[in-house]
Length: 80
Image (tube, rainbow, N blue to C red; front, side):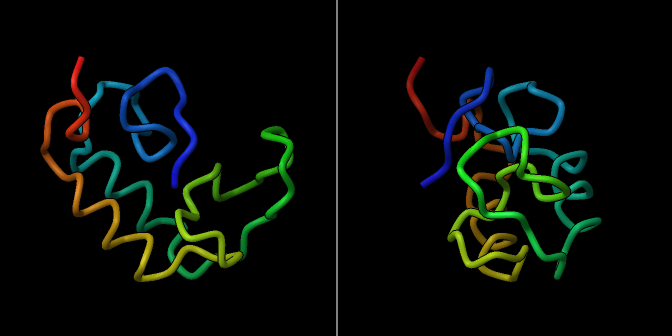
């Protein structure tokens, strides 16, 4: 569903520490209900930074719930 960046948690992991924490939740909440650019090129994703996990064009409750499903789980549940 989410394309990885340097972290196992992908673009949801704002500070790339391989765990979804309060920092990441705060970042997501700051763009809640914002419209996203849905173009495929990473440089054009704008404010959402590929955090629109269900690709509906906005940061919605679905995206927040997905982030919370990974909250405080080392490496977002991925094996190293």
